[in-house]
Image (cartoon, rainbow, N blue to C red):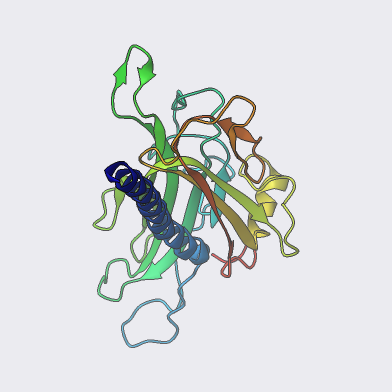
Length: 284
């Protein structure tokens, strides 16, 4: 009798633990997705004040710098860098951050630029910010076998364009009151992927980037971004490891299907975000 009760309790407790773990993954993933949706929609936003009694310019006077030289200099609304870890404020990483395994696909990086306005700042009322979402490898230490509990974390950085009224040029700064760098947004991530789409919902080709004239032109044809984030459970989710030939699989938009035999749950969250402020190359 007691054995039967204990067996029933173990089954119920195991199921309850799985439900809690999946709910935890879902809740924390939703928070990150909401951040990405909000920021992606802001890409290319330009503030127009109009006639005013404050003595401020009617519209933004901030210099626009296209990404013809480096991504760091770029004011382009959205720049996606596929399959690259890490981020520096100069965006000139001499040695790319290594991945846990050569087969790992994590992660894409995205830069988002938008304007804002602060009427309480008489020196520079018009603002411009660049947000960067990127990934770095994480673990709980290491042993003779390598990293313990290897996974990836999503980080966020924010810099500001400094250009006072009357100045013709400016520069990006990272020490403003609103700025931050290497802020961990979400731990336990398997992959992060961004796909730029045109007005017909098709993948832009050549892929939008600052590398060539043709690809730079497509930066202003982005009408939506498909976002996929693959999350991994913090604790083992399944009771047993999968058998050889019957591994659990994870796929992506453009990634090869990957197979896993461990007990962790991996789950994709996919959304499409429309870039309502990118309407042409003269937005700034």
